[in-house]
Image 1 (cartoon, rainbow, N blue to C red):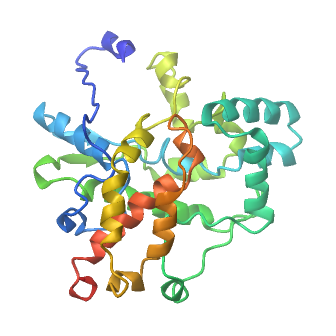
Image 2: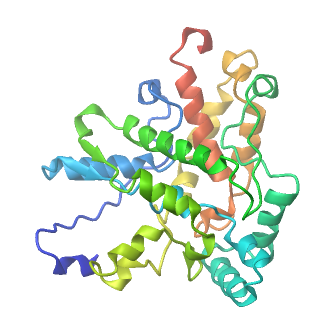
Length: 309
């Protein structure tokens, strides 16, 4: 942040979201009346909006289409290095990514191979009742790198747009201000989808191509992040602090509760009981994302008379 002080008209504010966590407002269905697709980091977004609003700011710029969006895909950059015979690059990126994420390089590469050539892992964050899920459209199959475009990238783009809408929907009306995604540009997205993934990573971190354009504007430490992953670094710790309240919430769902027609409550209980691993590497556990999402889904369903206990 100190690097930003060299710019004129820049006011810095550190947003720590003290005392907040992913399960804030657990028993308040009104927070979820618009959509069930709320991010676990909504407490952080809420604090950012509050800070900007109290400072009199009228427009918030979001990086959608960049680091957290479509220009960072496809994620299978290791598999592409392998198929392109880029052995040194593959070894370097696996080693550095392993250190950053706390996952062995063998597992990182093996996960991509399984995802594209074997039976894909279920990456849905929603835990749905099998009977309900059988009536839903089937998951679009993913294809290996360099395969002719299957349209999966466009589907991921749509999902990212939905996520951005969800971020805004979770905020109290008094904090909603002008909201813009300048990187969500059609030509830019199409370019980023088409370019090989070898250009989308550096030093073990997933990168987005737009950062290259900032090199003449921002210091290198800001233009190319080299020290941490995006988001809240203590997310896993906040998650664990609120987990007892989540267990109590789920225990209150009776066997005849209508939300069970949609949500796999048994699977949710298993996810809550799953050990989350190293708090400094929350990426190691996929369930740490599943639990908040399905708690939010239950709250979303509660607003409809047919899903009230």
